[in-house]
Amino acid sequence: MKKAILSIIAIMVLCGTSYGWDRRAHATVAKIAENHLTPTAKAYLDKYLNGKSIVYYASYADDHKKNLLVDLGYKPENAAQKVTFPHTFEANDDCSVFRGMRKGNKFVKNCVYMADQYAAELKANHATMSDSLRVLSVAMLVHWLGDMHCPQHIRYPDSQTIGYYMVKWGNNDVRYHTLWDGVLFGEIHPWGFSDCALMLDTCSKEEIAEICKGDIYDWGKDAATASRPVHAYKDGAVINRGDYRNKFGALAEMQVRKAGYRLAHIFNKIFE
Image (cartoon, rainbow, N blue to C red; front, side, top):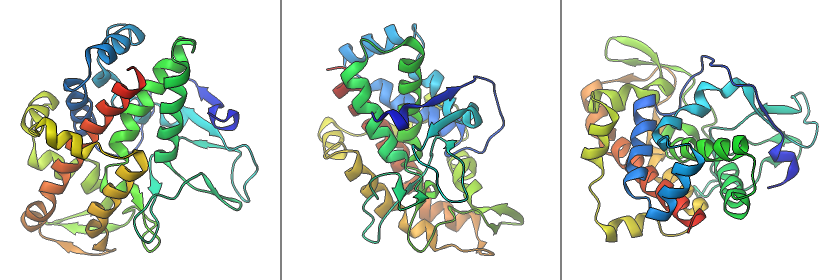
């Protein structure tokens, strides 16, 4: 990984942040992935995480968000030299993933690019990395694979706000992004992550292989294409809760499921 992207400040104190998926959905992604690790990958992860499950680190990136910084390697206009790790990515007009982290002097938030870089670095150097960097790399991959599949963590050319505006959800005024932070998934699956994983981890080996075809940029395009209809709801929209659950509940489940299978695939390739 480029040195500019590897400059990390890791002062580990809990801090309040907004979430991509909520803790339950992120834990479900990690649990599904754990179910599909090869014995070799599981052995390495057990060793590197001191026996802790990857589920333990599912929301690590949110818990420590303000203290996990990336050095941009340049001075953007009207911005800081260091920024928090990105939890979103930008899609192009055709829903393909913008590649890189800058457009001229503009910093582009790109968790797909970061995940790709971290996976490559972990695969090449996991045996010689410091313990702290290795754990951080694993934790970020667990989280980024979840975030990149969350419909409100994708920015489109005509929809850059990722739902940071208010809508009417039943009788309540809520931020639209919050529906995908956890409200929708929580209403569909109001139980623990293990039960959620049990109910969602239903694909055959052949179906999982199809889901994991291509690379992380192909997965990002797949997520952006599937999530596009979610962004049709604009500021002030009045949303019927039942209708919305019926329309997008299956999408929420599908994105969590795919994130889990693809996370396992990444770890299996890293530690093959």
